[in-house]
Length: 244
Image 1 (cartoon, rainbow, N blue to C red):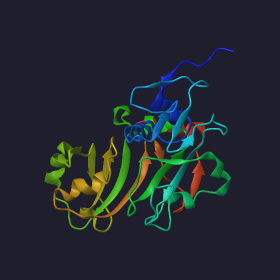
Image 2 (cartoon, rainbow, N blue to C red; image 1 turned 60 degrees about the vertical axis):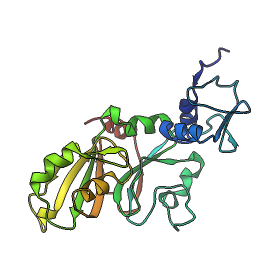
Image 3 (cartoon, helix red, strand yellow; image 1 turned 90 degrees about the vertical axis):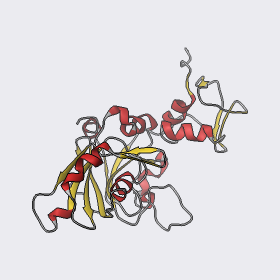
Image 4 (tube, rainbow, N blue to C red; image 1 turned 90 degrees about the horizontal axis):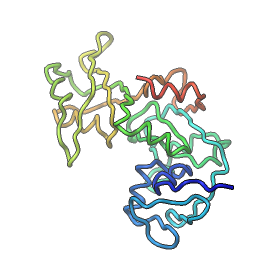
């Protein structure tokens, strides 16, 4: 039987459903990945079925469950972590028990105070495609600010600012045109997804985000899913993630 060709270590880890490829790179840099008994380095390759890889003390075994992708309407007050000693509830506490065997992780994050569409999967390669900014998958958010927004600042937010070594910016900003407090409500589009990016971006211009809800990724729209609700995506749903 022919052997599989060598693959990059971070891709090998992601393909086995432990995390996304970028998260795998962080684990390698932190010295938490062992390849054939030695601390691994970025750029190394793995021969599937031949080499032995251990991540954070656990040996990687061949995938025994099928890839799965779930959409969740994340409620406010719940964190996107598999476990956290400082919080009582994570998004994984909301996942039906029938998915427990799949070793799911979140595709990107929504902070504790944010809500809306979050994806969970055991497919690291898919996660990397969705989150990497070079793929141009737009995420859309409804944002409510603490005070009326001056539309003359929109070009400044599109240009962005540098905070803590990161370029924070919006791809598009659309003001609400009707409803109560329409001058405080906006639609914000992002291609990237840095930690608390929308909140940090508006704070840089003197605004506080009171409510933040992600309602769309690509052409996949959050609809008819109650807070905390979970829906398994079809092949067509997954394809919609890559359409803009």
